[in-house]
Length: 240
Image (cartoon, rainbow, N blue to C red):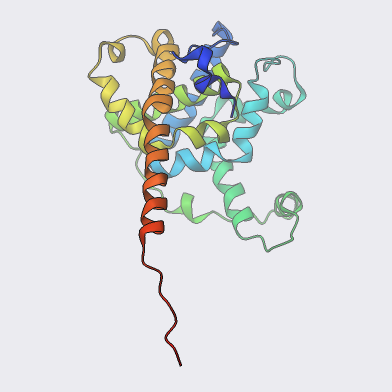
């Protein structure tokens, strides 16, 4: 993770190296639609967010939506131009669970990329349990759908503003922390503005919270655990 969040010259955690553009808004919208589709299908964000943000598919998004490239130029993006992927967020969600199901069953030392290729070529892609267990009717909970859209948008915004991978961003902001932040923002004037206008400020607020609250709390907790461990009486072996 880049250290600009905690740099002494950047105490307000202002983004120093990235200007948010109209293209970035489109990328954020693509990911927010993906998260909302997952919620609509019946997936809970506390399970979907970590799975996606640490996945190979998220890595493809990271490269495709990178500051130096953009979907119009790089080779991986040309793969994402396949209509079923770009026009159907549901297909991407399903692909995520297909891949996870195959990889999770791999044995130690097996080539995971080869397993995926073999499964595809042999047409052995059985329906993963995660997809088979989905409800038959879409999730219509507007609050959960709105949260999922917000979550996907802000995660991608963090990736772009800090030029960090999805995995790194999720390492800083897990879903539990993000849901708590979302609830606070709903009761804030910032939560009443259009997301495309407020996203950068939301990310700045999240970064300040990370630097000023989360990291110090984590450090204090670790020190407390260490002190408790040091204070524990030493057990001596009984003499024979």
